[in-house]
Length: 469
Ligand SMILES: [Zn+2]
Image (cartoon, rainbow, N blue to C red; front, side, top):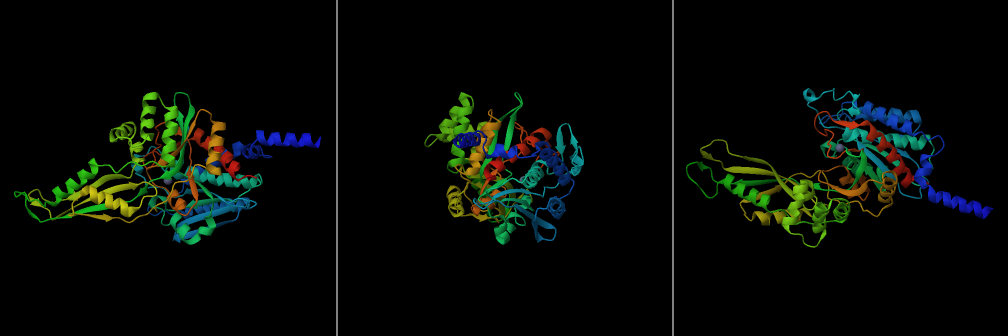
């Protein structure tokens, strides 16, 4: 009998992994988690935490009050007056290292006159939540926060601490937020894994099913630089060889015509392999050609035709964004400058990279000055960890129609700083229809209510999968 019971117990444990057991923990109320996430999101949107002032204390005061109500201890850390970060922790049994759930409470500014609704009202209409920060990043803050509260409410036994971190200043590069926390209070947030913004589900509008879950495992590092050419000023009627505008334009055009060499890493290799398995043949053939040794530049250009970001994730990209010089049409100016938005592949040595650029330009008259760096070089998060496995397992169970794609962001997030100190950080976020950009950093930013609720459910399953006993 004992043996039979034991066998039955083992079978049940196999049938119901930790996440399912936790999801059915006594009294667990999924709808409450979803409703609370929505109301917390609306409350957070109502606080104007827009850059450059930030005033993130509005959000951390509110979150602190909510934590007091449920008896979860927390600490706040002010990097500058009003620029507050908040950390709360639920203890596990210590058998595994902590899991960090983070989001940023600051938002970018708004052009109020171009919004349909007040950007700080959190209006819910047409199945959407409108407001600055809805998609970037208060929805993620709200769900991470409510998951933490639910872990406490239902007394879920944990094998690792779960830490919630609400940071300031992400939109300013993280200096007063994640960088400040890492430099001054790393012991408060130190973890094996982090879950941050930088990923999402894509819903196929034809079938209404999730077709892809992008999990952010890597991102590029911004490394901007200014090119300067000094020449002789002169009369516009006399064509000199050292015309600063001409020399600079030639340098910029060489960089424009000569992309840096392509290079794949674990994330992009897996990304293209999985796309090749799921996309129509003509498109899949391009991904297979990219995965073959030494793809030609013509093959790489085909990626740019499908989507320019795919061309960006296989190399360090160099994009001219500002060109300045001259002030009168019959005067040759004595100097001209161009700004390059360089996005380096992870693990790039900046010195080597700037030398590559100097070699392409091949003109000592062009001076390259690197600009201040806000995001550190770092290695991608590995794909063989307990957390990445949890993403794959839970998403495959819950949405068999979807492919899980480890992804490299062309933009930058706080994950850069966390990965640079060895916290394997993964991007995950609410779903949207394929190609939808949710007005992020633009007007009428929104999240769809239904995918937001589904994101809350999936986060619960993933967090309990990786952190519950
Ligand atoms: Zn963001």
